Length: 405
Image 1 (cartoon, rainbow, N blue to C red):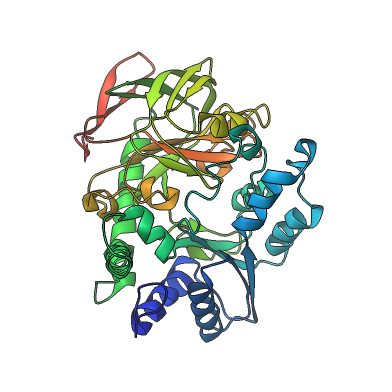
Image 2 (cartoon, helix red, strand yellow; image 1 turned 90 degrees about the horizontal axis):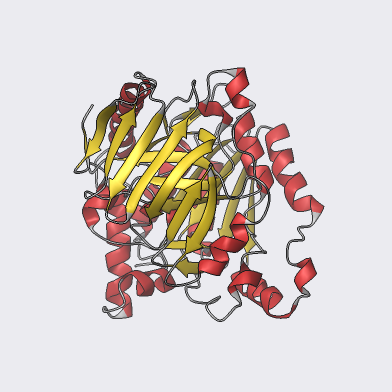
């Protein structure tokens, strides 16, 4: 029997166990927070069951309803659209205070729902994103992960030319491979991949580049780095020593750049989904570290709204590199989901930065701070990445999708 996820029961259970036992690395006695959207109930329930099998004291499932957000964007007074009830953020901080585990589910569940909304209004309501999420990540008080939840609406978006049943089966099959559930031991497979990414991060960190330079069709961008910027892979450790993998799948290495030193023009190489809106053909120009021009073929106003949220929203908080060994890029599919698409290509993010990527207190004080964090993909096999040393020497880092260091 195939569920609404497209997974058979055994695969759904293995998927849930991978996210719970390896991704979040839930510990006996922990409270486990599971965040999902209406339409992802099957996966959320499987995660809750797995959490209890792993010894959780309590599994707390919360659902976000995009249709309610749609109603708000249609009818609420404009000056209320940025309002977030205080207890939303207080709950996230409480999860950190109580050393809980957190698991989130990605994947568009209502594609196109917000297409008729004024983009400037859509850009003001950023829920379900909460700025407090960045704080608990930087404080390393929760062990957490995010994984993709297949659904029929998502399958129709990714594979519009297939009948519903075939589209869902195709998407679920792709996610099974991408999440390495086709391996006899997915945990061993992910451990090996994480080891390779950690090694790559160490190689890119070692030269202490002053900047990274991206060059390709429509892109000529220099991203300055801080003196103690270090590249990391998605293998984190909480303040209590719980090792976890925040994203499954994860194929990136990333760091926090100098928010004052981004210059040039960059063209997104994949569509991105922001607040339920799909942005296509994105082009951004930076001067003095700020995004001074944001254009797109569709929904540019949505990202402009996000970039105007606060002082740091138009500056970079992350730069990430992705090689072509990852399974997402090899699939050749655009998934319209940031979790997957950002791990198919190198990317940058407007907004908040990760303090964990800095080794010096002075540099931690200089990182970008914002209420937003929006990734968009800028890499491809046609985009070369060079490290720029303090004397201006360019050193190849990624070429044709392969590590050049």
